[in-house]
Length: 473
Image 1: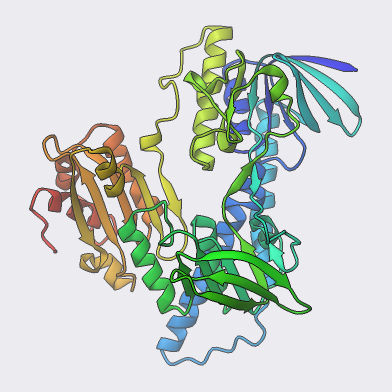
Image 2: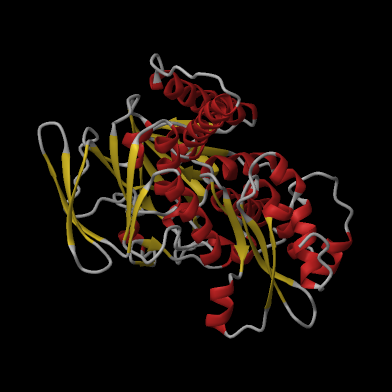
């Protein structure tokens, strides 16, 4: 068996793995990445990037059609071809994946294509197309990511019952789509499909859509979706689906306990993701796990010294940017131990300063403590809000549905968390996130001069509302 020696070996070339490998190389470590599929992982290839391309096209399509009709134009959609929209999403994914390949080469990171398994605390065996290779490393990072979670009664066939992966790889639209799960993935697909004219039904087991987001934000999103003709069932349980010749029958029990049979042309299952930890050899090394997730400590190191883990396989939020940040921390820690470079400034990713975003319309973004979590933990707090309908830019661009909501300490005026729902939420949330990270107060944000007219003025107004000084509301 061929053998190679490295300072740092990464298993998985997703946003956690490739970022860590590049950062390690920048710090003078010899690094290699093992990847059995496409460079860039789920995010670049079958997740964040292609889905945002579809969302962008859906937004232009829906808004353009509405504007033309509003001005009296007749819109003929008879030659609409969704496959061209889909091809644009694949082109975006392919370009970025090739870009990551270039960055790995530029930074002299070896890319090894194949399936990896840990044969020891410092050894990785890789089955490549050309035979077996053994990689010896002074430190190993696991960044193998996740896959769509299957549930009983809804086995994926990627023809009638789709996973998110299957849906992103499909170049055709059904006439009727049933979406099981109203989290970020489900609601983003619901937006895209509805915008392109698909009859969409969404069912969620929990009492509201986007159950991980602020309750007020989720209500605004649900109201907007219903106004566009999306049928929604919350507090509903789906027991299974029967695939017929040309359609699917979904068996549902609604919030009142009444049984319902819903017909659709296809089903999208978006009820979470399962970790890719099987076959890595973790059980032989005593790597501590709970419910399928790898437990990590300081610097994201596992219970087996010298082996680290980041991303979806850990207990941290399953977000690409969380994985990337954790990967940088690991690389800097390993370089510190091996080369004496500065230790990373943070021991782990700060969960309270990780933003989340849902890219449907209206967008939702948040970080830190929510009102519900603050109450649950008994943390003293106050809440300030400012509605988009009081913001000139939002009204002028016909996007008045939304609000900025800030959680803050009533004594120190420190920012504890925030939620934004509305136009540009995923971008504007970072003003409050940076302020909170830098230990600025709502007063500091309120006194910052904001350009007019901008959506970000709503953040300023919400901060002023926290001080009893809001002008436009």
